[in-house]
Amino acid sequence: PPPPPPRTGSVAPPSPHAAMSDFGCVYCAQTFREEQALSSHIRFGHEGQPYAVERRAVPPPLSELLLGQLGGAPSPPAPAAGIPMSEVKKHASRDSAWVVLHGHVYDLTAFL
Image (cartoon, rainbow, N blue to C red; front, side, top):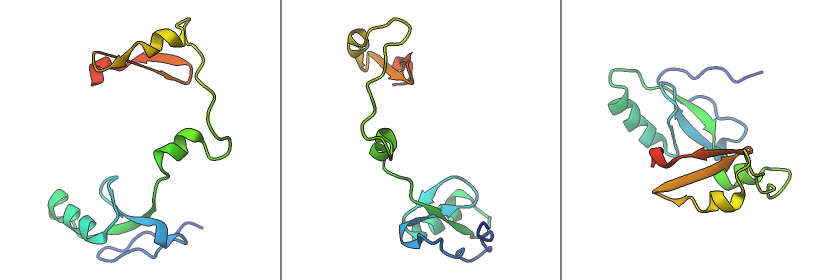
């Protein structure tokens, strides 16, 4: 069964992985390593709200997400829409930034 919801004004019971948990704001998605940082966040970011906290698992490192937990290094992306990877590699700057994600080529230049 899921753990009980956090009580206002106190810390929720720690998860089984308490040593590896962050302090999460119940009003938004922010997480903090230190409870004092969360307290300040609630005081100034959610002014007037009562103090409440929930324990959240620390997300895995990005490298672990990208490599996958079971299969090791992913295979290189396949060329998408007939665009060879040699062409995609030419677009690796702030002036022209292309990426391949799940076999599709995206131009992210406008977002930089």
